[in-house]
Length: 210
Length: 210
DNA sequence: CCTCCTCCATACGGAACCGTATGGAGGAAC
DNA sequence: GTTCCTCCATACGGTTCCGTATGGAGGAGG
Image: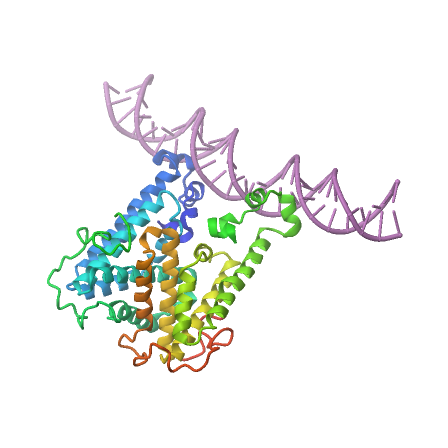
């Protein structure tokens, strides 16, 4: 994962990694069938660490709005970005593609679930979930690739406030009346592993199969 | 550019390209000093085609809101995405990095200029411009890497509507009262090449140098 | 006709990988 | 203590790329 964060999939190369770890190719090929086997193992770990774990953590928040805010904060203010960005850039790799599809489906479904609980119509919730996710992808992309373009410190806080307000705000379309504190929510375990799937309702806006 | 769109920077390889064009390495190295020289040439062309040209076109729209809408439509509904995504993924390359910085600075500055004309405070306009740009980056990223996650046709239209409403809407922060038709605008050439620079005011939210 | 210049092809050396072959060190089993 | 199993190191061949060396075809100029 460290190598992926630093150099992307190209960093997962047998000889450089062996040298870096002070061992040899012979040792590597004892533990893994080949390079792809190492990649698969890393991607399995990524699933758990970068999606399951964070959704579990965030889901402990008391209401949907707090969950979304915690999700945004957790996901923008950490060192996860390089791995996410580099894996995303390798989504054409046959081993990476399914992992990425799973991650996107689960994450957007979780966000959409929170938005529905907040009172958005399902179709609008799906749109806003994808919207939020795209913004997240673009944000970490900028953070990793062009960090000068992204504000820091207090300015970053203000920026996140603008983004969250835009995603949660009711801009002319099917949103809740004025319910930004989650008063409609009574279900405190609302999404992880059992939430609405991304393609289970009439808004045929995406066709992901988690 | 075709090779970049298909395979990213890795596709710009002398021997494969020569074979593809039915010529040889000998011929290539007559026209270009080395691989980097070809890359530089491609990036120069990219600057013009993917930023200058589109901003010129969009700037012909009569008011800022229409310009932003035209920009969003032009930029999401075309075949530019693969090149943009692959170049973005190669922003660690020493030749690509400056081009990417220039592009981000010019594009966000253009968007911010439109938002200021629409009545947003400069700092909020910068935030929303970066917000919009991040959403754009994430969107094309998803389109290229995980197309199943992105709606198509009418659903895409609805999605873009949601996004534009969120970026232009006045969600609790310094926006214009109810001025979504651009009635405050009287300047029809408002940005290309002479807009506000991204770091020319007090909101120290970014430090790009175009 | 000879020369030179432009453009291109072939052939080579080198680097960075992947994967395999082979053997050897060290401990467990009997 | 001999055997075997685990784990690892060295050495090799193969692939794909970069860049260079060299020469050759074809036309322009004298």
